[in-house]
Structures are given as structure tokens and as C-alpha cells.
Image 1: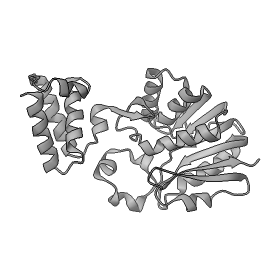
Image 2: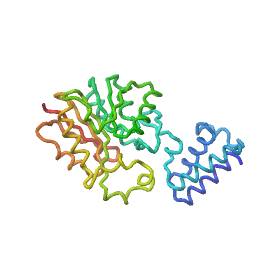
Image 3: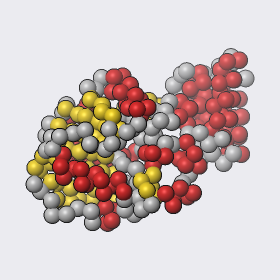
Image 4: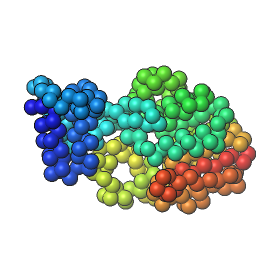
Length: 276
């Protein structure tokens, strides 16, 4: 079984199972089975797979056809140009979340103390530490998620302090210049409409906020009023069609509300400044 033949068979299996981008998926899974980068497949199409390589590839294909996300199979996902480790204990970082980083760098470039609430894989916390050099803390209620985040920080040489707590309950009043978060925002009633890969594999604690989808936003805004220093920024990722409802949560304690669209023009990030 050569690389070329293995790819052809993998693409056919994935196509028959209605898996998106079957060619790319087959290439990623085969490269992972070979413990090589994808470029190797192009230069070595006649490489003969060993028995172990074929067994690993076949298992990865089977699991992907069953709905397991490719990122959980390879244990990797790129975010802001860096390679992050991911497991089913954390949400898979999405390109849309990079808008949170871009907004933070634009609005709060001199923030000295940054808090990432609900860090998951640590993508936001690690990226902001490496991009700004600020002191960064990150929280999560899941010990398993914090373990993944800490491994990412260590591997990428990012000095981030990780704290196990509910949102920002462990932090003192007026202690942060910038708070960022990609919170759970999916209403429970929308679970059936999610992609199978998301609904069945990604951690529900990081997906679902409650009946309305606003429950965690409400708590974040309330807690941020306490934890932010005067003039500090709260920057959060928005769920689909939630921008207006989330903006309505902000009172006179806030100013400079701004909604940032993603590349498709969909409101993706909301930023607000503490008016204290």
C-alpha cells in the first residue's frame, strides 16, 4: 500500500461518509499516521506504508467517519500562527476567535495585567502573553482543560499563571487591565442543530450556557465590573445573533462599546471599557 493508494482509498471512504473536505482530511490523517508533515506525502507518493502505519491510518479514518473531529485525532490545531495541543477536554480553537486577540491588541496594547476567563486550550492566554509580554492569568473550572492549557504554555514558552475557579471568582477587585473570554454561549435548545462533531465530541461545559445562551455573559459583565481597573477593557467572543442582546447587558458602568465583525461580516467580538 503506497501513500498514493492510501490517499485515494481514504478520500473515497470519507466522501462516502459525507465528511467535509475529504482530500485534506485524508492527507492530514495519513501524515499523522506516518508521523510526517503533509508535504512529505507529495514528495514520497510511492512510500510503502508499514503494517503499523496502515493500521493507524485505518483507525483514524474510522474514527473520523464516526464523527470524531480531525483535531482530536491529531491532537493539534493552529491558532494565531502557533500549534496548540487539543484534547476532548477543551474546545477546538477556531479562526474566528483570533478576532478577540486582534481586538485586544488594538484597543489595549499597553495592558499590563490580562485575565483570560474560561481558557480551555489556553489559546487566548498564551497568544496574548507572547504577543504583548504582559502578565497573564487564565482560569477554567475544568482541571482537565487547565492541564492542556498549561502544557501548551510550557511548550510555547509562555509564562501564564493558571487558576482553577469559576469564571473570575479567585481575583481581587480592580486587579486587571484587560479581561478576555470566549465563553459558553450556545442555548441548550440549540443542541440538536449543532454539527455532530461539535455536539457529540466537544465539551458541553464549554459550549452550553443555559436556556437563553446569555447566562455566562451576564456573569462575566457583572464580575468584570469588580475585577477591572478604571478604564480597563472587557473583550468577549459573541455567539451567532447575540450581539444586541449581549450589548444590552452593559450599564452606565461601561463606555466605548464596540462590536467587531468577522471576515463574513457577522458580529464576532464585543468590547467595552470600564467607566469607573
